[in-house]
Every structure is written in structure tokens, then in C-alpha cells.
Image 1 (tube, rainbow, N blue to C red):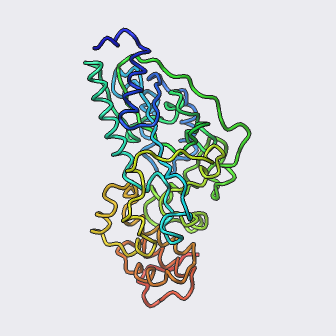
Image 2 (image 1 turned 135 degrees about the horizontal axis):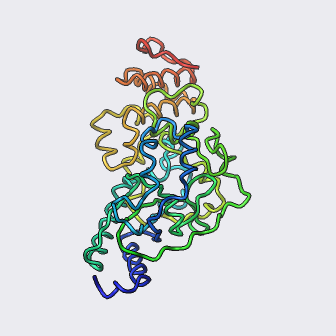
Image 3 (image 1 turned 90 degrees about the vertical axis):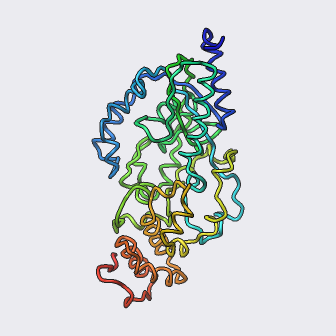
Amino acid sequence: MTDLAGDRSALTERIKELARAAGFDRAGVAAAAPSGQEEALRAWLRRGDHAGMSWLARDPERRLRPADLPPGAVSIVVVALDYHPGPERGGEPGGDLWPRVARYARGEDYHEVMGEGLRRLAAEVARIAPGARTRPYVDTGPLLEREIAARAGLGAVGKHTLLLHPEHGSWFLLGELLTDLDLVPDEPLADPCGSCTRCLAACPTGALAAPYRLDARRCISYWTIEHRGPVPAEVRPGLGGWVFGCDLCQEACPWNREPTPASEPRLGLPPERAALDLAGLLALDRDRYVDLFRRSPMKRAKLEGLQRNAALAAGDRADPAYRPALAGALRNPSPAVREAAAWALSRIGGGPARDRPAGAGSEE
């Protein structure tokens, strides 16, 4: 180990500098201590707020013991990466026909972008502290990352359940580097929300059932990203035309009025996807989908999910211009897409019933 070995503070600050040099906007440190959110997590699971995401209920004890990932972890370096595109002239990219997509998902997959930066950081830590063990995570391991990031001083969990900072808002992604180095933890921030409940009021489906509680069974992001198969009829009116994710609670937050634009260009919307409208998404074949979404987080929903969501969004807009694309979607190999297209045509009116395959009736 270098001459930093005997100075925890100097080593900690040096690692934070290296994190910023690796491309991250901010870094903080938390002790790899047991979580203080055990009862909150168990209550969330007992209520079924995790919806169909059954993996979240598997071995919750692992999520409460970050020191076991890997065994012997002492500290967690938490990094933040801003992703908001900045001022959006004329509204959404591509005009009104562009699919509504959460801002974090418009560019390259943040798992890859942040994973690359964390690997660079790990290599630098190994250089200045030979023999130190590290392990990076980007939303892929059993970590309660928002709680850990709050302990690392990068923000406080807001009433919309996202990490919120009074200077940087909530438009940022998180990643972690676990290490056996004994670093100096940062001080947590105070709750920035106060009496404000604008995020709760902005959620059209009531997914923010109470401050600091997200019920995924009502969440637009859950239904458009994680859910497989048809979307229940009672859920559809609240989706609001979103094709992947949702930003409404963040848009309502006063701390997000002047977002810090992303400094990482790979998180920006590429031209080939900016040119894609709902009709184009409905018409995509698998080869074009693979090519267009190869490095996109939107591939999480798979082609079937994106086309199902595009059909529902077209039905939500009720624009007759979508009839030809929806009629073509009635021949989609996916029953969920066919059913969504038939439903959308029933909303628009004048749908070509003769083109509807058996079993693709509408749902009111």
C-alpha cells in the first residue's frame, strides 16, 4: 500500500477524486454496516408492494448485510452520475409522436456506462492500495443502494422513494464499489422534503401510497418495464402514454426545477432512436429491434413489451393516424401485442375488425 495507508482521511479523499476522474459526478463513502431498514423492507414485502418482482423477496437477509458482498467488506464507495438531458426545447425529442420514455433510459445502458467507470475506479484503487479487495455493483446485486447512498451523504430518500439532494435534485444514477479498505464515512443529509407532497399528488395511479412508500402494483414504471403479458384493463387508463418508465414524480419535485445536465454524452438520446415514433416502434421486426436497442436499457422490456406499450400509448392518444400501424400489429406474433392493438383500435374507433385474429378481442 502507498503512503496513504496510515491516513484514512487522505485515502478516502483520494478515492473520491479518482471516482470523479473515472467519470462520475459525485462520490461518498458509507460503512458496510447492517441496514437500518430491516423492518421497512419486511413490511414492504409483506404488503406485496413489490408486485410481480419475486426476486426482491428472495433471501432479503442478503440485502441487509452488505459486508457479506463480498465477505469482509468494510466500506462502500457510492458514486452518482447525472442523467438529465438539460433544457428540452419544444418538449420531447422528435415531437409529439415520440414515445414517452423515462429520461434515464434514453441513451446507452447505464449498467454498462457506470460499470465501465467503476472498473476503472477499482483498478485505480488497486494501484494506490495494493492488495485491497473491491467489488463493483450497478443495480445488479442485493444492495439497498438508496439507503446506502443516503448514509454516504449523496442525498436523502425523498417522499417519492428516490434519492434526493437539495442541490442536484434526483436526476442521477447510483453505483457502488465495495471494499475491505477502512475509509471515513460521510455524514448523511437532512430530509429535504419537509411538508411538500407534490410528488404524491403528481402520481396519476396512486403508486406513492404514502410518503416514502412505493406500491409497484400501481406504478407506471413497473407495468411498462417489468410486467410481462397483457396489462390489466383497469391499469391502462393511468399509463398516460408512457412506453418505458415514468418521470412524473420527479418532474413535480421542486428540487428538480433546474436540473444539472448530464456530462456523460452516452446517456443522451441517439439519433436513430430519436427518429422512432409509436408507429415505427409497432412496425419493428426483431432484427431491427436488436440493432436499435443493443446498448439501450429499454431492452429490459423486450420487443414484446415495448410494442404492447406502444399500442396502449396509441390507444391513449386516440389519434386515427395510428390505425394503419395498429392494424398491422394485429398480426404480431405476440398475443399481448395483438390484444393491446385491438384495444387501442376500439378506443380510436373504426378499427378493421376483419383484420383481427381470433382471440384478439378488445377489452373495455
